[in-house]
Structure formats: structure tokens, C-alpha cells
Length: 134
Image (cartoon, helix red, strand yellow):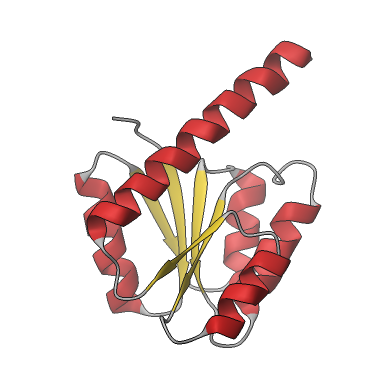
């Protein structure tokens, strides 16, 4: 299993706590922030291996995703947007903002684990290629 540093950006304390507990049990190092500004600051200070964003309600999640994907230092961090199952528009916005994946609520923990493992593995390969190139 791959252990990763994961940043959760979620303004819902209960949802964030659930995700943190689930991912920590899997062996990941998890940090939680509750605002878009805090998410961007955390990624600038100590870039995580993956970002899970559930700040969709006010469009902040899409703004964070777009900002991360536009900045050279954070563009390769996989971003997963968490959405409600009925919000097709949110999924389309996530793709347009550059999200690498999205997860519907309520989560299927096995599916979430598989998506995270896959994205972190791809990030590690990309990091190795970037390192070898420089």
C-alpha cells in the first residue's frame, strides 16, 4: 500500500473528520483545512501528494483546483473534487477546473481508497520523471 500526504479541504467538520479518520487508518498523513485560502496556503507551504476538495457549495473548490493547476509548483498535485451525486453541473465544473477525479457523496470507502492509490501512484511516477529530467 502507498502512504501519502493528503490535504482535505472541507468546510463541513463532520465530513472532514470522517474522511480524516478513514484515510489515517489507511496509513496516510492527513491535514484538514476549512477554507479555500487555507488550502492554497497549505499547498504552497508543504505540497501534499493529493488534495481532496469539498468546498463546492460556494464555488471555492473549483477556484482552488484551478489555482493549483495553473501554478507550476502545484500543477502536478492530483486534485479530487467531492460532489453530490445529483450535481452533474458540479462534475462538469470540476473537469473544467482541471480536477483529476471526483468522488460522489456518500463515499464508497473501497472506491475512494482505489482512486487515491491510483492517483498517488501516478504522482510518484511523474515526480520520478520530473526528477530524472532535471
